[in-house]
Image (cartoon, rainbow, N blue to C red):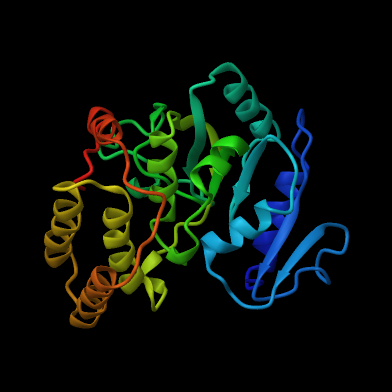
Length: 277
């Protein structure tokens, strides 16, 4: 959205300095025109803020290549050969369809939040594994997988779009992979800073269940999160906003590509995160 120019310049510099790969770069302005700030790059001006998932989809339609990298404006690639390593991983492991790198803080010594490690039992953040959730700030995915799953869920606007993409990747027969040996830098920021956080967090949880899960998981998944949230959130306004979002998710449409296979429900359980939490 053009509000973090220094961070965006740093992100782009880290991208353009990548070695061992050919890249086709586009800067998407979600509600602002990035062209005057980056005249040497191809840009896409979206006249209104369409939300994070729709912005990423819009950019994906404009670039070439066999793999996509989606990079948020405040994320910096930590290694000049990181994309080459990811390309080699995808070339050597045909079962892997999506990669999330390990995220480290921009501030030396600052603890990495557990939510950045994409598995229920965090364990050792330095250990790679199948991912069962997704931190979306730096995501690599095969183009053919992205096209097959229908891209990011436009309607989500913000929050849980990574889980949607990950579930669909697994349902398409590919593994989502947490590559702990590949790192990116990102500041530790409280996601609740957004006024719409609690509302969209709840609505999109319900939408995930309605779009993808089969009964009884479609009922149990949002119910479990309702109970968890009732114990987590202390402020009345925050809880009220979350409950409004939960109700909105129930009554509103969450059209997707159909329910996931039963095999995918079982795989999520096998990999340590049954579709209940």
